[in-house]
Amino acid sequence: MILEKQKIRAGLIFSGMLLFLSGGWGNAGDAIPYRHRPALPLDTGWAFDPYWKNPRVERSIYEIDAAGKEGRVTHLLEAEWTDARHLVKPQDLEQTGHTPSGEAFHSMEFHALYEFPRKFATYAAFLEVLFDRHTMAPVKWQYAFHDTCGVIYKTIRGNTRTLEVDSYWEGRFQHPIASLEGVWFSDGLPVALRALPLAPGFRAEVQLLLNERGKPTPPPTIVPARIVVGKPERVSVPAGTFSALLVSVVAEGFEGHFWFDPDGVRPLVRFEIVQGGVRTKYILEKRDIIDYTQP
Image 1 (tube, rainbow, N blue to C red):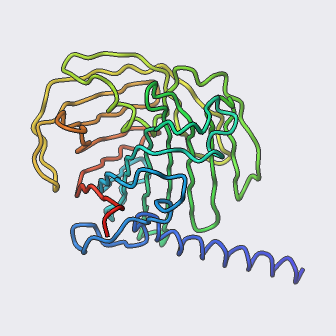
Image 2: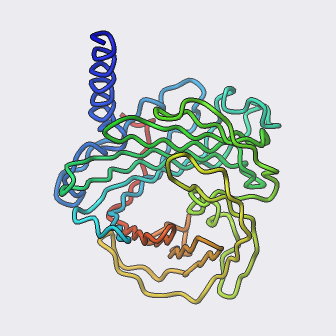
Image 3: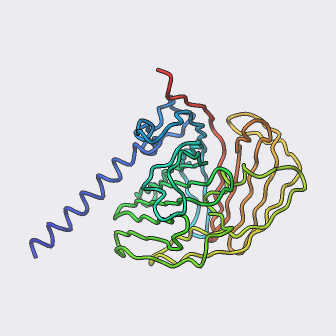
C-alpha cells in the first residue's frame, strides 16, 4: 500500500514537472498575452541538430479564443505556428516510403497553452506535421497533449497505415488506417492550403483525417472535404491590415475558414475552426522571420 502511494505521488510530481517544462515550447508557459510582453526567443533546441539544415524560420503568433457547449474560455489563449523547409531526420522517415536523400519538406509546428482559470487547470499542446515538398503527401504527423494528470501522444508516419497512441491513461496501442493516399490532416491545413494555386473561384476536393479528442482515444476518421476559395476581403488584425483570400474547407464534422494574404509566402492572418461543437478563432498577433545563421 505504501509503495502504491509512493508510485502515485511520483507520477503526480512527474506530471507537474512536464507541465512546468512545457513552458519552453514556444513560450507556452507565459500566460501573458503576446502583445503585453517583450518578444522572447522561440525554443531553438532543434535548430542546432546536425540534420536540420535550413535555419530560417517563419514564426507567426496568434491569440486564440474558444467557445463551446461547456462555455467560453475567458482567458485569451496563445500559440505559435512555425513554417520551415528543412531536411528530415532519418528516424522520422522510417517505414514511410521516403529516404533521407536531402530532399526538403514543408513542415509546421504548433505550440499552444490552454488555460481555464475557473477550473484552476492548465493544458499544453504540441503538433508537428511534415509534408513532401512536391506532392504535399503526409510524411509524419504527431500530436501531444499535456494536462494536469498526464500526457498523450498520437503519431502517424507516412504509409504505415496506423495511428500510434501512447497514452498516460490507456497505454500503447494502434488504430488501423485504410490508406493515407490523397489524405490531408485537418491540423495541417494551414500549411497544405498554402501550396495550392489559390485564386478566387478555385475549388478542390480532398480526403480529410480529423484529429478527434476523447477518452478513450477514438479511431481515425477520414471524411471527404470540399475546398472553395472566395474573393479577397479586407482583414484587420493586431499584426496589421491585409487584403486576404478566404479559403473555406467543409466536411462532415469539420468546418474551417482561412484568410491568406496572397502576396509573397501567403501569410495566414486569421482562421477559424469548428469541430466537436467548439468554435476556435486564431488571430495573428505578430509575424517574424528568424535567421539562426545570424549572431
